Length: 467
Image 1 (cartoon, rainbow, N blue to C red):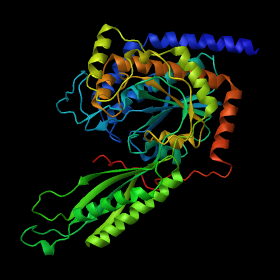
Image 2 (image 1 turned 90 degrees about the vertical axis):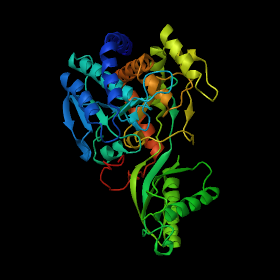
Image 3 (image 1 turned 180 degrees about the vertical axis):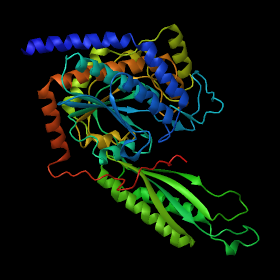
Image 4 (image 1 turned 45 degrees about the vertical axis):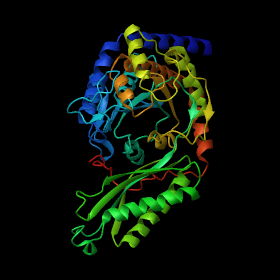
């Protein structure tokens, strides 16, 4: 019986790969539309509507504006167990306007760009969900597939509100992926993160004629930054703290009565993030006292570290190996070669886009970034992969990433992800032992007494955090 089931799964996977190959042009058109929209977090109105439309056309039931977020949604097809979720992202990054060219060139009138490839992310996830839906519809597999429309991954913590709302309750496993410059599916973590905006208020006055009558809010920000920078010597070495001054005044000859600084605090351990963030808050209070200004702060986002699931990661790796990497035609190769001339760092050979990175387990890696996928991973067994949507060596959040995300190189990597996730979905629907192993791994990793408490607290979604 096991052999028959295995044979059937092989056939279903071959069918899915062939089916997705036939939809390349259609899926590329969809991701290119989202690439053009380039909508930032919580403002992805057209991007979200496009993805919802694709799913609704295929018979999914759409629950829109979930968790108090106008651009978030849950699309459901099927009934009963198991329930498999797929995450879709679609927000762009501010300040990364770039054409789909191998030279740095902004697009007139466009203020953001898909420097993390979420135009590809959303479409690949929807495409894999639709393929699984068709197998449920034809009774090849049984259960329910849910596609989660997840806004504002870039610092807005959209999924945290969806987890807090209970939208992942009853889900057996969750799939996701991310654009990258390489293909991989390993068991790895990420950095937990709390972000906040600190707002100082002072007294305006003429900076030359009446400086004694003013109290500079910018002094408060600068004093805070100085204290935090001195604090770096006395915190765990793997901690990351970074900030930008979002408002420092309007004219040098006016003592600014308002100033704002935007902070991130990161570490692989959420407990350390909480502790260090409290010290940053104390630095703000001290700066306020020392500069005779007032300060308050607003937590904008907060995410856990990804809780890797080794059994799921190993199976995802097997599927990725079956799919393979990306190959370039002559024009894509020329594009890639020119992109690489813009790098100021060492980079791998272009042909590594066609290879799969070795499987690895790095559960306490303190490098890299943060993601709100992490909070999902603490409540549901979660697994992801990376696909080579960018030229090898390309850093995320760069103009080079935006450029590749807007042409065939990005679309080809998107197809690798769509196929791999759909194939992994087949395994999860068919293999109860895999689901049970994944659940046991989750419970072991998070501990017996774990209770989910979001790092961003009970605040409402920060819908205007990009303003």
